[in-house]
Amino acid sequence: MSDLPAISMIELSSIAAGTFAADAMVKEASVQILRVGTIQPGRFLILIGGGTAEVELAYNAGIRTGTPQILDDVFLPDAHADVVNAIGGERLAKASDAMLTLETSNVTAIVRASDAVAKGADVSLMELRLGDGLGGKGLARFVGRRSDAEAASQIARESLAGRDVQLCESIVSRIDDALADRLADTSRFDGEKR
Image (cartoon, rainbow, N blue to C red; front, side, top):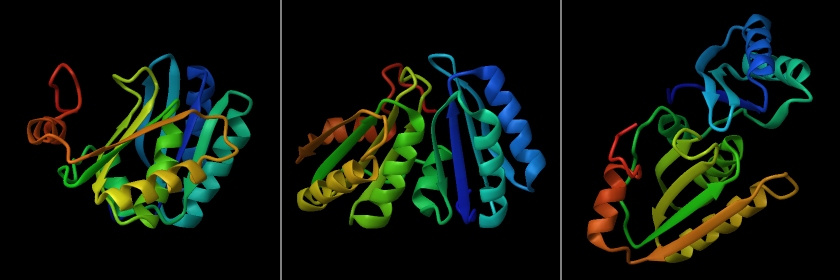
């Protein structure tokens, strides 16, 4: 997925409204549907990618048709390649000096924050999880030096300022090797790699 110059995600509280908005988006412009469907607790996510102008047109169509059921949305005209790859399920790094964990109350917010961090801090994206198995939350882990993880944490907070979203975060320094290995493999309790 990393060759996509732009991505957009819209998160809706209604499955019916989400289906209608997704259809309007793909009819508005030639974009790729990267993912579309339900997540817990009964939300609907639309993730598209493609050329910047096309994604913006489709995004605007989704906003027009999805309101007022839109919980959150993001349009990234120059999405960071690591974020795009992590959305596709790629695990990108193993813990080093410090691990920053970001948890948001919705999925779209973690995409927004992760893109800002990937572009603005000298850390590596380890993992990005979107909703499923998280009760509709978003989860991202970044690794790097402690000072860079602290800068990344500040960037994440700034990227979500003024939005109706909760952000929880932690930085673990010198993470235990066994824990780092386990989290590099999967962060799901059931051990599934998804």
